[in-house]
Image (cartoon, rainbow, N blue to C red; front, side):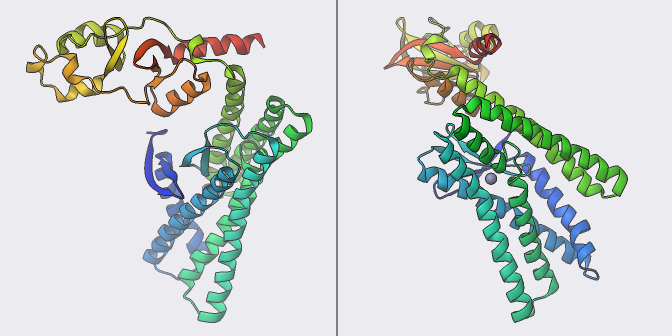
Length: 377
Ligand SMILES: [Zn+2]
């Protein structure tokens, strides 16, 4: 279930996606607000009111996180860093960069934009709170949600400003180290080391809260965020290592020439028995002559073909044009191939030159190269 993404909407041209883990988080936030936070701060309201406040508060939290991430993305766009979109994860979101920021200054500016936007929302909410309470005499239920949003956005800004890579504060720290020593790998190692340290502290804090102060909900939160941060710190450092190792390497270097291809005249039954059962690939190139690529055929396309037609239908009937999602050029950067694989979840890409198939590149071969290169230095 984790790792699956749902596209929600487009904002300023950025895709806003939500990781399915976020659905669990949204329910947890609404629940902790409705049974913990609001009843504790505002006594004598009805159970329904607490739940309405909880759900509205969770939606407000969710919009605050999107606002924070959109600000990162807008600054990135100004600095010409390609952004792929925004995905909401556990504590906050991740603005997905197409590549690393080009220099320390860009990274710093991009990182600081998020916390600044959260501080701005927090101040606006405090302003609304004073207006509402003093000027309009708003009911305590509305005021409670507004104050909660002021509080949660302050917390979001403070948490993201921790110098723990890959949080915004950690990115700012990495940018400073990077500018200082002109070495991105070194800067990332130090920043993500500090990030792991903070993650351990958060997990310890969670255990302490849970067992010694009786703050069960707070304890679980701290522990979960610690685990998330720990994983993110390790992953971000590995990504930099991988980028460094693959930088400047072309797809041509990793591809296998003469890959398995299906002739268009083969029947669907032959496709299943001689190719799919034999090689276990999910997608095959369809070529005519020795290497003229006329399309791609995937196991998914088989669903629409009744078994009675397996003998009469041919691969030519089934094949569709190969999409840019499963093809790449031989001169393309290996990092591009890797991120395409990560995005589509497929471990194989067809290497094409014009309408000729020249080879196939697999995740396995790239990882073999990577582990050798990382081992050697
Ligand atoms: Zn941020």
